[in-house]
Image (spheres, rainbow, N blue to C red):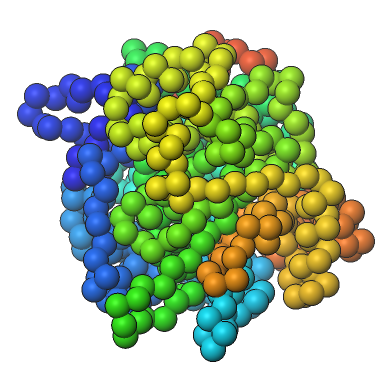
Length: 504
């Protein structure tokens, strides 16, 4: 399995037809600013899908990832997935007897086979260390980094941006890891108090938090600017853990298969059951994993993209116009992890939409990178959109509150505001005959203010996270300036080098 860039940059090594999984794990962005994708998507047969029904989550992850990874021995890959996906790691806020399921399905409306009616379910993804779905991929990523770096005798400086959940998930996955150092950018004062405390209270020597006076898109632009400075990237061994890193997306593909297998029964006839997924979406990484699962042959009928008031993706799927908003037009909402107006992973899907033509992708993203937009509404590519199963909708603060209340009153289930965005749109677009699965984004404890407004009570918080906001916090606040971030990285790399020499 080899990989290529969405913008067509050729691999530099004449001895290899393309980079391997381990190469792109450490590389993040491609040298031309594009995103790595497989040369072809591996296909999963119906027989294989049936065999996977007997696997636990860790072994299912090993089986699926083996289709994307051929430079790590299968036995080692399975050891890594078994180390990552344990009941101990994914037991936060969950009854003990369900912790071993890792990503259990909770039915709001069970399917009714007699009436040929589909159900409505929530896939629990937020019981990891930071109470967010990002843990599902990030915990594995930490083990993969440590394994590959040890094999190669290398170190890496991870530079990433977060709108709220990626940062804490990455830091908790990488804290204390050998040969890994994390520089995490976040939008200053635009995350919840809980999210800030999760990140900024970490005192591990390999973790550095940098708050940018701007929005998430400003922070993400800095990450891309640094990654596109190829000499700096090479000298300081800059890597990525945002969903621009292919390994993140590949790991997220696993829970689409897990959800499908949990929601359906093996059919004795030629009929293959299908499901829909509703995915709260800001940066497009999570739903991009669903797109890839569908391309692999998982029987997904529709992928429902649910946005908040920052509805760039909803606008595209409705109109064919992709129009990222400037900082001043990016709203601060009560589902802050989706306060994104430039969806980094969207390029991977558009690459498939335009027939995997890198020249077209380069042209389209040249317009985006220059601060503009692109319009595919009159193109044959937009006519192909139904082939990929995408539909979309948006949610507002009032919708969020109403959905949280209704779900709690009707089902006794407390959900966070992002999951509420997904559930609100799912209910609007659900059809009677097909099961709809909503992907959970986080536990309500991360967004206490909104839960209090919706329900008038405090969300439960795991004992280990009590008093989190009162811990000392360590963060550097900077202006929106890639050069400032580069100097920060340089300074700390030099300090580490001096410390290593003094110890030696």
